[in-house]
Structure formats: structure tokens, C-alpha cells
Image 1 (cartoon, rainbow, N blue to C red):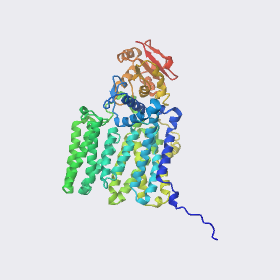
Image 2: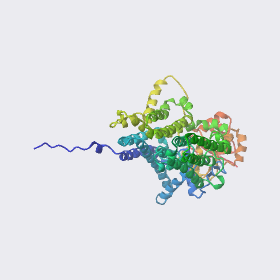
Image 3: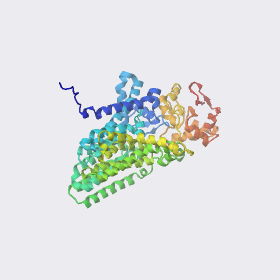
Image 4: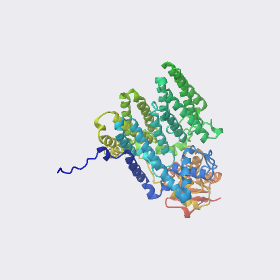
Length: 601
């Protein structure tokens, strides 16, 4: 009688599938990023932009016009925001879907959790698909697994997918991943080429943060058409038509007809419409030259002429848009407010203030950029465009992150699938078994960032330097719960710190003057001038603005800077409890650390 031999199970059946790993990873991230919301309530996890986005969605549901983006309670009679209804629409639909069952408050809370969670799932799926698309069939499963895990460890980007993150950055990241997925396969799929044009137009209609990456990737498509001519005629035309057509449709959907040519330099408007629609048409014109089988020099001349005409038309029509997007911010507000906004900080400032975080923000995308360059040099002709356009896109994101820290989020998460594909492209024994996953985890942003945090204290022993101050949101009067007591007062106009404005708008029916938005020059300057003026001079300024209440917050950056600028100004007097006779404290809504004052008429 032969001994019992247990049946052998094929190894492949014991390995987790990418779908299971994606689901488990997604659930883990959602729970981890939702812990602060569980602790404090999801409404108190909102950033200033999240809070104002919620206000904008509420206004839309209350009947404000689709094309009317004016925030009437910010610097009354209001300012036109530079945001997009592309983000407002799905948020409003989710609230409308849940409101009959849960009521307004719970419907908003569920939307605040669900929207970023769904986008996180989309980002994981897109990253896995980008990595597998760039690999041979035998390597695709492990590439997907590695890409899912490394994307989940892209720490600089995860903050944009936490519960309550509804501003616009997470949607832009997802659209950019979709753009990279489609454009990297453009040479072989005309349908993906058209989708790449749609993703580009959608991303730019939400915001302009991804413009450098999209512009350079689109220029790479022009280069492909110039080089290969009629071989890539169909996908190039599909991309050009998709970009031009979708941008025109989005303009009709989002912009009033009388504003299509308006020189809006910080949002989707005339200038971006010209670049998108004009760029798509220019690409079609070059394709027309390629269709008649013109020689290389003819295609090159046609692309140079089309590009020169497009840029010339842009500079002639919108010369003011060549400047920095923050050029319109008053110099006083640049030093008082904008220079301390962390997401606008360049590499040089971060290196001075928090050098231990440099590896966490920059090491992984730079490492991936090197892998992409190596892959681009050694790849086959059939895959060369994929690596060229991926390298160019990532290089643009890295360059943007050197100028503004906010670019590091997109650079890290786009680098995740490209890193995996680059490691596979090396054709070493790393790909065998689970080594690919282990190596990917070893070079992830979380690992490299942890190394920086661990090593820097030893390197910096005995040195001293500046630090980036991160105040507690509640102590600095930025949370909705901290502003909620103001809702019991009769609606009026509130003079409050800049970073408190969004929370007051979301928690009350009051209007505010100051808010952390570059278009709000007038309201922010009104607050600074009134609070740094002497109490007697401030009285006239408050009367001219018809101010009803003043909120002073000792934990806010504004209070510290106002006292530093004007030690005998109104803010300094109120901080010491020395109120002029035209102000009275409202004890019922004041809390330790901050005080609400009523302006006597």
C-alpha cells in the first residue's frame, strides 16, 4: 500500500491576485487616512480649501448659478473664485443622493469620506495598469502587485486622499495618472490617444497645476509625428482631435459665452482654451503635412511654424499670463501670508527649514527618473516612445516640485508605476519570484523618507536652523468646530485671521474679509491694514467696511505677525486685552486663546 501523498497545489494559485491586493491595500489606506476623522469628526479634518469647496457646493445646491463662481460672503460683495464645477458636480450629486436617507449633515459627512476614498481606489488601479502595460505578459502580475504597494506608500501624495479632502488635488492626480496610462500607449492605440486628450483637457479644466507635465508630453507627441510621419498619423490625429474637441466642449460646459476670451491666467479660460484647442488644431495641421508624405524637413518646418503661430497668438492675446500665477498678489501679502504657505515653498526653502524631509519628497521621483532614462536608452524601437513620454512627464513634475513643494505629490505617485516598470526593464534576477515587490518596497517614498528622518538628526547634531511651524488647527481657529459658536450671533461681517476665513464661511452665515486665496487681495489687505492701524485709525477703517465682529486668535500666525509689524496696532492692543471703547467682547462665544469682539455702531 503506497503512503498517502498530499495533493500539490500549483504555486500560482497560492499567490494573491492583484485584485485582492488592491482591495486590501485600498481598505487599509482608507482606514488609516480616516483615523483623524474618527477622532475629531470629518468636518474638522477639512483644510481651508476643503472647507471653502464645501461652501461652494452648498451654494450650488442652494440655487447659485452653474456659471456663477462668485463667493459672495468672501470680501463682500464677493470675489470670483478660480475653481471649477468639474469638482463641484460629483460632490453635489453624492450629497443629493444621500440626503433623502441621511439628512444634509450626514450626507455631507459621508460624501467627505467617500469621494477621496473612491479616488484613492482609482489611483491604485491606474498605477497598477500603467506598470503592467509597460511590462511583458509574464511580468505583469508581479508588476501590478509592486505598483499597488509602492503607490500606497507614496506618502507625499496620500494627504490628498484623506477623509475630507475634497478640494481638487486628488482628482487632478487621478486624471494625470489616466493621462500617463493613455498617452504612453498612444503609438499603438488611437482610442487611448483620444482618451489622453480628454484627460488632459479635464485636468486643466480642474486646475493648472499639471500644465507643465501635460504641455511637455503633448510636445512629445508632436515630436513623434515629426519623426515617424504617416506611421503614427491615426493616433496623433486622435490625440489632437481629442484635446481640441474636449477642451472646446468643456469651455461650453463651464464658461459663459461672454467670458470665453477673458484673460483668466490662473484657471481654465481663454488662455488655456487657446493653448489646448490651438495645440490640437496645430497637431492636426502637422498631421496634414505628414499625410501627403512630406519629407522629414517639411514636417519639422510645419511643426515649427504651427508652434510659433500658437505661441505668438498666446503672447499677443494674453501677455499678462506669462508672469507668475501669484504676480497679482500684493507684495505686503506675499511677505505676510504667501511666503509661509508650505505647498508653495521651493526646494531651497525646504532645504533650509526641514532638510530631513528632502529624501521623502524628492529621492524617489529622482531615482525613478534615472531608471526611466536608462530604460529609454536601452529599450526597443517599439517601446521607445512610451519611455520618452513617461520620462518627459515625470521630469516636468520633478521640475515643478523643485519650484513648488505641491508638485511633489504628483511626482511621487506618477513615479510609482514607472519605477516598477523601470526595474523590470533592467532584465535582472530582481524580477524573479517576489524580489520585485521587495525591491519596490525598499525604494518606496515611505522607506526613503524614513531614512531621511532617521539619519538627519545625527548629521545635524550641534546645528540649529529654522523650522516650518505647523500650528494646531483648533488652536489657530481654523477648524469648523472652533468657528461653530459664531453661528449663534446675528449674521454680519467678520474681520478674522486669513486662515480662519474658510471655516467661518462653512460653519456660519457670516461674511468674512480675509481668506487664503490669491485673488482676495482687497479683503486680505483690508484685514491687515485695519489690524495694524492704531485703534483710532482702525475705527474709521472698520466703519468704512461695515465690520460687525472682530475675531482675534492668539494661536494664529496672523496674530503673531500683526503684533510684530505693529506693536501698537489694534491687533496688539486686543491681544493684550486692551480694547478701545468701540469694541466689546462677546463672552458667550469666546474661548481660551481667542476672543470675539462686537463693533459698537
